Image (cartoon, rainbow, N blue to C red; front, side):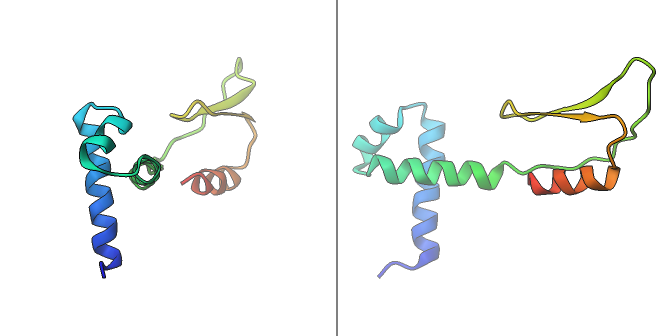
Length: 98
């Protein structure tokens, strides 16, 4: 029986190869005899593992014309915060997004 690591390596290899091939997932699966829903699962899993949030130090400076702080993520999310938001709370929120 195939071990857990071999199973993961098999599917992660196909997930990366499919993305690099430029083919649709269905076309790739047909060519390699794979189940499309399983490949799709492993592609999502690969994206989740490789998409990590990196925290970088920033200095918040008050400006007279600013009414708040806006954080935008790469997946089109937006967080509107007041300028007096607690830095400790903000760090906790950002770490929760990792």
